[in-house]
Amino acid sequence: MRLFGREFSGFLGRCLAVTAALVMVAGAASAANDGVFTVGNYPVDATAENAVTAKQKAMADGQEAALKSLLKRLVSVNDYGRLKRLSGLKASDFLEGVSVRSERNSRTRYIASLDFSFRPESVRSVLQQEGIPFVEDQAREIIVVPVVRKPDGSLEKGTAAKVWSDTWKSLDLEHSLTPFSVQPLKEAIPADAVTRAAEGGSGAERVLAGEYGSPYVVLAIAEPDQTAKKLGVTLAGIDAVGDISLKRSYKVFDGDMAYSLELAAVIGLGVLEGRWKARKLPARGGGGSVYAAPAYATTSSGMGTPVALRAQYGSLGEWTEMRRQLLSLPGVENLQIEAESARGADLSMSYPGGAEALSSALYGRGLMLESGGNRLILRSGN
Image (cartoon, rainbow, N blue to C red; front, side, top):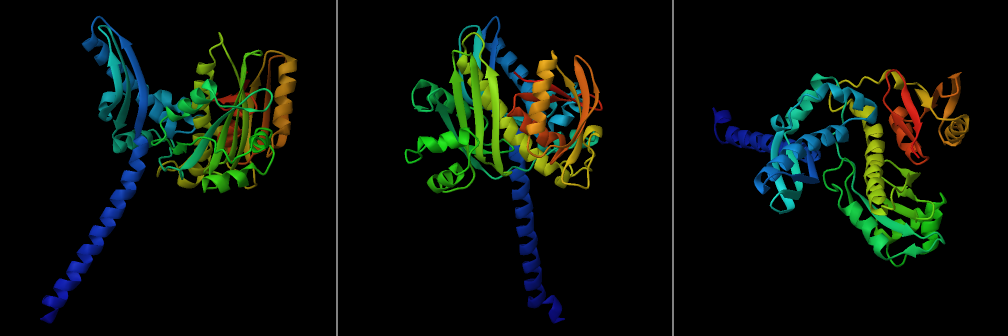
């Protein structure tokens, strides 16, 4: 009978305490993942016959665009084509709430920066039902240090540097799959360390780690060239996946360098997220579902993963440069040209991490990969 006395009461109390603790831990883990289902700092802008209608239009259009942005955040670039199946979704059916960061309006216009939060279970459910792999686990937080280099190699500390830094700060730092903080370049870091990083040299990582107290530091080096109407951008350092050294060039249209800087920052964040998704998807299985590799990225028992491409180009000179970039890319193996014409070529290769990792690496070389049936489409991004 003593079993049902104080001993049992104490035992039951301990069990309930352990159960409660486990529930709290599970709830905290779920809440931690739920953060990526918010699209923060999202800009909206609408004009209508009056301010009220303009605001309603901005909210409606904004939530639709934010849901599309969220789906692309969670899904591999290789599966963007599969998201077309979800084009009929109504964002209002998934929306959990909206918060305002900033807003202003006139009689006919509404401009704001908003946070759109979507219901995690609803988004997970629709992706799982469609069999689309996704990632919701956030990477460890890193530090991004925006830097602007002049043509002579010296560092810009004026307007261009502020615009570049503010552009990175305007991104959704907290809810990204690869969260980061933006910090200025510390005075103790010599310009030659930035030069080494920009030119693909080694040694800058140790300097950065010592100054920022963390090895996870990425320099975002912008090199504007108004004369050539181009913007060069290098991401160099260590992100949540490992060493990163990616270069990319952007055209500057109509002298609008600010727009090019904004585009470069958005793509830069996409590269960081793409690298993380490439790391997580094969292991995680797409957010709990069975991960089925696309036909053009089947798994391999070796170090590399087979990838099938269709290169599209405007001239044989462009094709020669594309082929040179592929051959010089570290990690590319077994490159075979299966068919070749004046405007296109079919080829196959192996690359560590498969198509997702290859796409991220090619960003830095002015090449872009897009979904295209059984083969990825390879194009020049310049």
